[in-house]
Length: 165
Image 1: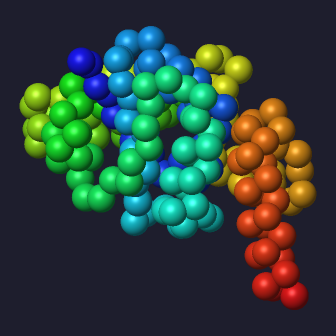
Image 2 (image 1 turned 90 degrees about the vertical axis):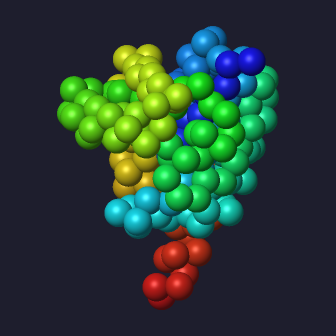
């Protein structure tokens, strides 16, 4: 069985992420969507909230599961016996960082390859930060995220604004 792992903070998951998941499922028998913490990122949603949001967003996708990931991705991939790490590339600007991470992961875990997938061009500009910015200013994010994610964003920003009043 070929198992892939698609790691990220998914804060929140977008249609671009879901497109990468669909593409990965064409290649792998099973896909683990790994929710990780990145100390360099200030997340809007807690790890538990992101886990639940992602789980709901992919519930209709066969052969997928969501897992929390702690520590290094290379070690996690080895623990779950993944043959590959899936990374999405939207633009050339993503490549340098992703290339460096892929080489570091290969050094730590030579049994796991990194595979880069490009999303459909209609999602090439899309990222979670943009979605959060639009949602925080009361904009519609319907074309960027599933309804369940849009609802979670509205609730989060509603609770944030009521705390600031």
